[in-house]
Each structure stands twice: as C-alpha cells, then as structure tokens.
Length: 193
Image (cartoon, rainbow, N blue to C red; front, side, top):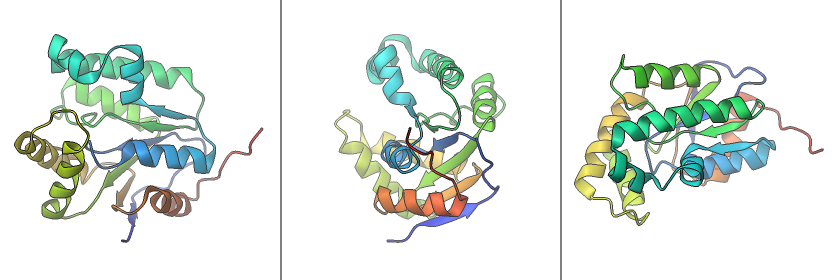
C-alpha cells in the first residue's frame, strides 16, 4: 500500500492539524498516531461529544440531526478555546457536510481556517473508496445500513476531495500514514517535559 500526500499549502509552525473526512476513513486512529508521534495534545470531537453530552446516535434520535450539528459546532468552538496550539483535532464525519453557504458550513469552515486542514480518504477513485469505507462503517456495530452509508459516503466524498490544505490518499497502516504526513509537512515534535 502506498500513501499519496498532496500538499496544497505548506503547514506553518503552531497551526493545529484538523483531520477531516467521512466516518470510517481512519481519522481517530491517525489522530492518535500523530499525537503520539508529535507529542501534541489530541482532541477527538466525537469522543468529547459522547463524554460531555450523550452518545451521538442517541442524541440525534432524541433531538434531531440539526440540533446535533449545532451542539457539535458549539463544542468544537469551546474545545478549540480550551487547549493551546498546536494540537491534533479530529473532526466529526459530517463536519463539512452542511450545504455550502449555510451558517453551519460557514462556522465549520471558519473553525478549520484557524489551523491546517488535512483530508483523509482511502482512494481518489470513489468506486474504490466507497466499499472500503462502507465496510469499515458497517463493522463498527452502530446498526448502520449499507445503502444509507454508501449514499452518505458518496455525498461527503464529493465535498471533501477538493477540501483541505493537504489531501492524504491511503488505506495503509496509520503509523505509516502518520510518518509520511509528518515528513511531508515537516512538522516538528514537541520535546517531552
């Protein structure tokens, strides 16, 4: 397996790395690898949402998807104000999925613009990427359905393929992806205290 990294803008010292992508592309796993490699703090928005508010599926069932998006963006904003930069920030799968020009989309983009956006996808070819991600999602045990996951991924793929300051195309082991990304961006690790 190979990791292809398309750097669209150089990383600047001190910028938070925002990991972006649909569910099942490996953002959380890569985030943990990058945090360990760089010795940076890690913020995983999905985990924080579950710890601070509720399980995501239950929250959406009880309050609706729009309320989830609103709370998710508010939490992201609060988390970004709490921790010092640089850090690794793993976004939720639908972070950039709101329609273009809506307040949700504008706010999500504004938050990401405060740092450095990295989009993670398993392939540039949607027909190769879709079954990889859908299978990963179905194996997570959330009771997801193949048809809806396929549609969701295809919709988000179309949005994300052209997003970010860097595009990472890989389904290699997360350790290898993290190493390749750190080299490509020339991101220095913090020294342990």
